[in-house]
Length: 451
Image (cartoon, rainbow, N blue to C red; front, side, top):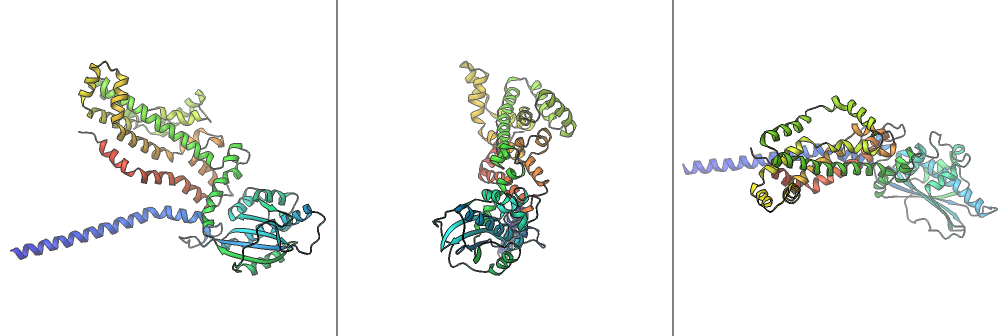
């Protein structure tokens, strides 16, 4: 009997261990499946414009290449320093946009052009691949062919250089090109500049090296991209994507404060000021409001807001949050009902009024509920789209998701840029959920309503 009992016990332990292993494997599998879209979006945002459309798609981006072109002007006579600078600026545009356009499938994420004269560097310019792409899609060369005569037409090359940025020192005081670089791109770049985009300077070297941090630098230009798409809007042109981030922060901050305060006030009145029958009726009113589909009140609400003057302004975005959400009122009421009545009786005997009872007893004890409601309001409304899209026409009032929708509808928007902006939009929610996961669990436990 003892041996049989030991065998059964060992068998039970083995089966328990097996179940734990299976549960762990299944959990990891589902976690990987849930995280895959985010990982793919991050990877896609760090690819260049050509690699993003590869079939089949790769999960990881290719190594980012940095290419340095050295053009020599030794022996060339110029009437003035301005004439020399002008020649180098033309060559800079031809080299950068020619390489970016014709070698777009080579993961060249950075191009540097050095102008040398008598062994000294007199000109230097550096551009990221995304900067050149934005000039082609939305900037100086929007809707144009990338040909030599087009690149140098009128003052286009001057405006392109001003946008990209450059250094010029006729005395040759600029930094020298890096030494010891690879020459994998020497042949294609030499052929390209000699046949398609001939420069006045002589190409003497083409060096390249891998700089994977350039993939992350793409996000900088994603954030600047709205300024190129909507150049006539001063706020967006100055602040770029941060305009939409600030709008979302304003709306969500107001929503969190409004719901935390208004729902707690309503719940305090229901829990401590009304009779049991009246409290049930009022609570039923708030809970019933949750059951009304938004589609059925959307147009009446929009018409009402327009008549009030709350359209295409911040009032239209903020006023809907002045209605207490029924579920949060229910959570607060359940928590307030659990607070011992002796606290309120003792304070009332000392002459405390309702405001004191609410602010000094209920709210300090409600920190778990407050954190839960604040976090749920943030997560629930960060991705809100329809109402903000419905009541805003001014581009500077767009929230994140309205901006993403309109940017995605722009013909020039590439998928890597859209993925990058989506990642920027999603990350705050993920980070906050991770940072406050412990508080969220405690809040859910503390918010339990005794039946």
